[in-house]
Length: 553
Image (cartoon, rainbow, N blue to C red; front, top):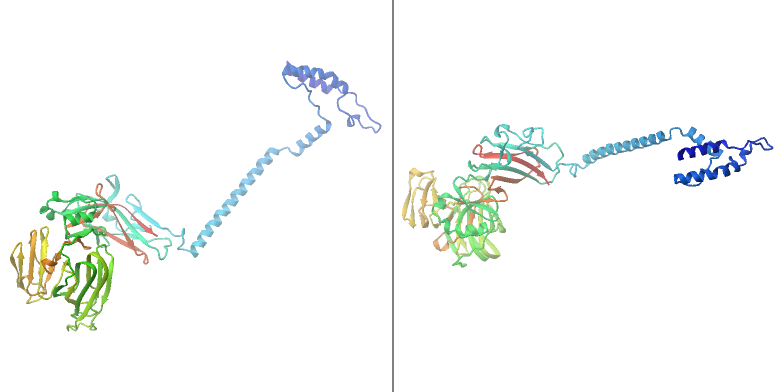
């Protein structure tokens, strides 16, 4: 075989050595000259060439090793018997060093974190910003958590409603969301509470958060319109006397109400804007209101350019404390254009003596044409004061909501839909007969049997004039005016307190009518910990809690 030929040649090359000769020093000549003889090279060169040609390899014979090469290989074998093992050992040690360095870095980082957190507790990321609970959480009622519900008896087991997991509210009693964080809370930060509920539309209910109504019972209302921003519901009694087919279509909620249901009462889950108001017959002719009002009073006046109101303030001094009126004038968008505080007459005792009349004035300038709201708020505890001889430089004036004249007074009102007007007197000798002239003529007899009892009368759509013979009589009405000439239609009377208003506006950003999902949020004061936010549904199984969040910014 070819391979065998090469082995044979190599073996014979090793055997074909010249006899060992020594030099004059006694050392072998191999130290001074080539290991193989010239005769050896010539003899086997031809054989190597022939063999290489057969194998297709190089024709050069292998270079014979020198004695020094053998010595070096022997020494290397002795000095490096575990070279591969040594390299592996070095790699392991290098990895161990890297791990040790990483451990030191982590430990030092943790120590630095707690050190900085102790010096800067309000800086991020040392304080947590979001706390959240969900209906499916196993620790929803665990008071060891930073955020939890304090009463497990008010919520049922989890269930899926409209593909949303909720815990139904099975009790009408109040319960609390408790925020008691275990972490550092930044000082001077704002906090917002969020709660998500799925409302049972077949079991409507009033929903309260911290004793404030956030979603009303809609059982007496019908859905009539979806605008770009809201759902509009109208009282069923109003709809009974209204032809819905005549409603004009508007994309704006405010325009829809003003054009179809002018001068109506409204409760809304959001602050409404103001549509463009057109008032015919307006002039700056001064209007006098001939009576004395006790306590709070709210007016709506159409003005252009400036607004001037003259009046007298007279304190009754019936109670201990200052008699103060806080007066604000706002435009239809809620912007304050005037504010002032009208102080006590100097008698802060409950002397019962009628104070001196204070001649006062309200003046607002550079007003755009539109409706302005004047609020006289009797703000001080124990305050008991009156307004009289009011003169306003406009012929378009409305009294909004309830009022208390303590002298005889005539007023006018219009009913765009059936409405109820109430009366109540509480002093002996103030029983009286109220004359009603207009669409229906009648006398309302407030006899002595009605002392301290509210009397309500229903009125159909139409126009009515009322004549109060004695005063000291509460009047419960939505819109009133000193006379028919002073009447005008305002877009609506937006009221904060729910009282079966004619129209309810639900913000689509907060409520999804298709699945009943309602989201509510409110700002929270976190200067005192723990914080409790109460929630109550008056009807059982009317809503289910999806979850809640407490966000700090």
